[in-house]
Length: 266
Ligand code: NDP
Image (cartoon, rainbow, N blue to C red; front, side, top):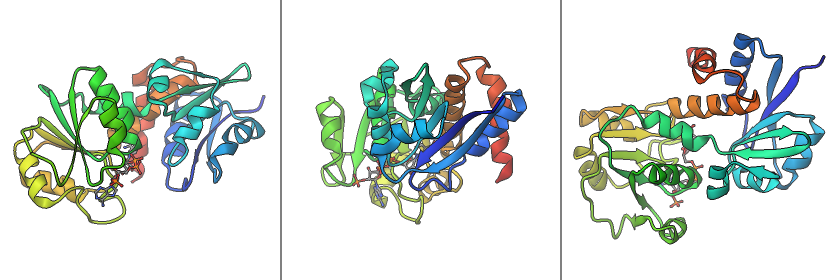
């Protein structure tokens, strides 16, 4: 019997840790699967490519998460609500879409206790799903973005939103860098005066970027704040995707045992 095939679709995709994460778990758990990466340049071909490659499941990364949503026949309720899919599983010829980024993120920040107000720096695709799940869970989410455009949708959805120009800082329990500032450069996600104000009064600071200490996290450490980077979010979204890929045959903790070995390879 041939192996069950999985992949991550993205552009770029060469940097993705998903193949390593999933293959470690397949091997550790004795599941006869193989996970690879696929450079998808045209998001509209996602569905055809999925079937041409005879895949059972995929993860989808930048910039195809909205195309992935439209490629599906069915969605879980949360993916349907946010219109963003990062995991697809084929069942009897139909494509089922899930969003595992948001529950992965929720779990990653659950170690911080007594958190009510959360300031998001950034308003991109990741902020969209994660702000919704936090609000569903009872957190108050406020968004601060460098430009107005992306904030419009959040405003329509009833979130409190600001640009740097009209921001009036208050005290927020958690401050999260949801931007790509610091990913490939050394920039901060907002002007230093604003960051110093919100970080100094926060209980903790989180960055969704992983694999490096960003200028934002360095600044938070200078204020002696508890911090967390994006590694746990990456790990947890992967574990939840793996649960869908293997039809919930393995427990979260079983999968974690093998998948977390990914970070030994750094
Ligand atoms: P998007 O491209 O959708 O949005 C980017 C956001 O960052 C926008 O709000 C943009 O502001 C802002 N931004 C970009 N550069 C700067 C800058 N120099 N200064 C201030 N703001 C800036 O990105 P995503 O939402 O898809 O991704 C955001 C981050 O999340 C990335 O760093 C990505 O690596 C990370 N991520 C981590 C995951 C994990 O598992 N840990 C999973 C998914 C994403 P504007 O609107 O003004 O352009």
